Image 1 (spheres, one colour):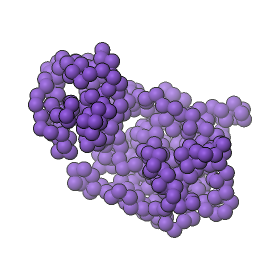
Image 2 (cartoon, one colour):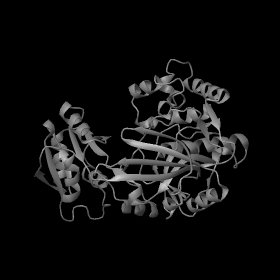
Image 3 (cartoon, helix red, strand yellow):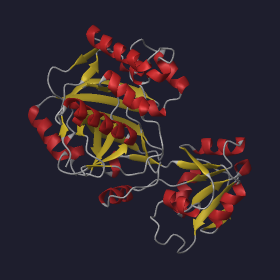
Image 4 (cartoon, one colour):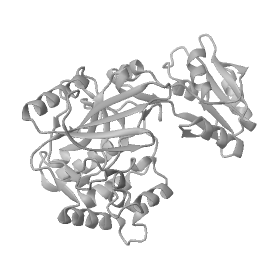
Length: 395
């Protein structure tokens, strides 16, 4: 099972955390990153997304490292005087109108070899240039944004129910983010022991975790040791239970051939039935009908109802069904979270087809992890996203 540990966290001394924290780097557009940087000279994107903020610098990563060191020297960032954990709470109303109160703990999670167990991936990753994150880690020698892990052990939510020392809160996009410090050694030991009692599933941050593994290997080669700070990575760990998670589907967009080729291939496996114009309400209908929805030219929608026995031997996942049905079609696949964006892409010609799919169930997520299987890329979208900047870690 993986190690999980407290550490001397780096935290902003700023009173207004809304001005210096940010959404994760991988959900920001370049324009959003620049707008965030303009809000404060100490905005975390200045060190977390230097390829955008410092794009004119000869070496953006060196510039980020210099800024990071200056902030520490000037007291913009201050380290805890003793090891601690951080409770990170998110309160919001989900798309179904239900009030949510999520609690997770931020600490250090062990970096394990791929396939070694302890820390598990749950979906295949898409090809992606990881050099940005690796170059940034090398330059700053820091973990600036946590990976999101899900503990397969029961009881973590209960251990986090008692408040810690309040450190600040931010309300952004309808979500309240609040952080609390835990310094009591007995409580820290209980939380760490529970996380270490079972495996942890990576929910978000597969590439960051892979980069941490590469950096760890570099450090082992450089130092000849396997007990340095790179053996652990900053992680936000919650419990894999329904009331602690909000999961959305990631819909599919197809380009590279013709809509009729996609529709014809899908017709072998699905009954295709007329549907109303796509809307947010359609997402609930997908679950009720046990169907997917094909979006074609003009934004017209059709239900995709699986034929009896068509997917025998295929995992019961919409993404897996689509991969199977379109295996012989030369499509280029991209991904989108919002119905309106799927429709816009098809109507404007950015894609010739879109398919709205259903969220993956928690039971299927856990079963996939326990069986050491991987879902198709972009199968799950955990929300809301954890903000960067509440807790940083220097290596």
